[in-house]
Length: 147
Image 1 (cartoon, rainbow, N blue to C red):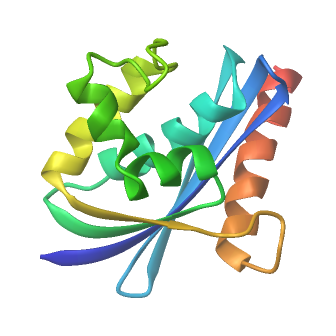
Image 2 (tube, one colour; image 1 turned 180 degrees about the vertical axis):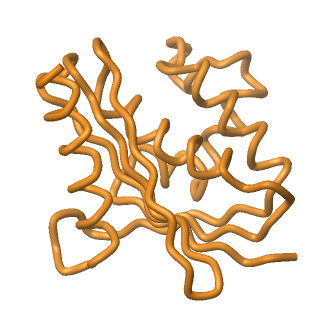
């Protein structure tokens, strides 16, 4: 199984507001940058979208290490919350509806195709790829606003 490294980040200008996401896929020394923007969205939706879009780029099942500065995204998998939400009809422990169900469901289905492991990185620090993803996400917002 091919091993891919995926760095992701999401950003939002206003929350909600125009949002952007960026991702870098790394495979055998090759890097692919992807990014996009949406009109009325939130930072958390952009964080999830970055991971989803990165995984959707893969043409066959892969082992994927996802690096994100989003505790929201990483902790949901590392702590098993997403599986509990799914079993509990997308309700949290406090019985409130999970936010962004559509994206969680899509991401969960992608993690069934690929063997995905999530890692939390410190945001806006010295991680070159996290900084690149942040730049891609914020540039996507600027380009969206310019049009």
